[in-house]
Length: 269
Image (cartoon, rainbow, N blue to C red; front, side, top):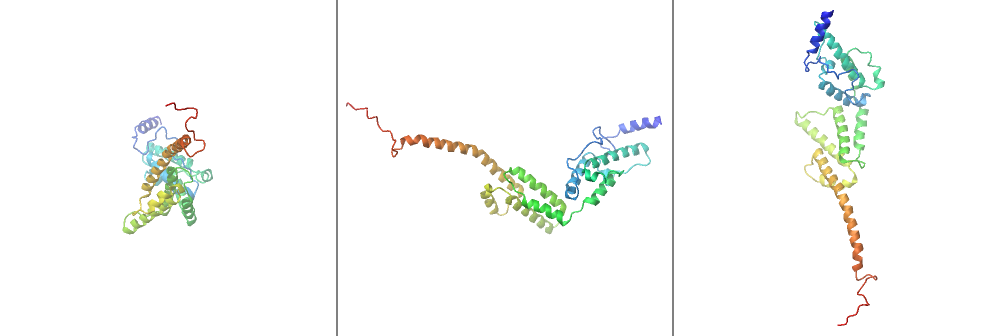
């Protein structure tokens, strides 16, 4: 028994950092590797994408897609595989809401939890698509910055694209469809802008071809910066003109309080 324990410590300690069985000291079971918690169908696409990225970064995604299989002929590495599996399992459980936790806590394999969540919540019906598309078309800048408004829209666009699975650019029809989707996003962005950008919006809509959404956002952001920078100087110039007009009133010959030459002064020449 002592020999097994000794060889186990030696072997595990020599695992390369690139080995999926390697666990960093910070890879504890209490770790939360994504900031979003799975609530159900409404945010599964976002949650699963974030979770996949986090697990790929930690070289542990293979424990949920079946790529990393348990080695039955090596009890030392098999025990380390079990440990990694339970760590990944707790990461998954830490990232689901309290309502979903009880339904997953009795699984023993991280891959089983991942598969069960996918089969249960990776289902998009018309009501989910409708709700998201409605929120996209109802969002407006509402005096927030252009960057904040654009980030909200892009987040919803990515969720929508993930739901409807836009085709890749593999043929002309797919390319035309993606161009149409880009045009719709441009119109949605312009529709939600504050009315103060109406002149810029009108100018953009008369261009041919239309600029991209990113280019439009950059142009509107420059206009925003110009308005903010000219706002202070504009106030100063108005104040200056007001003071100038007030001081020039003493030199207006048409005013009744115009002060001419001193009547007490007499010329003796």
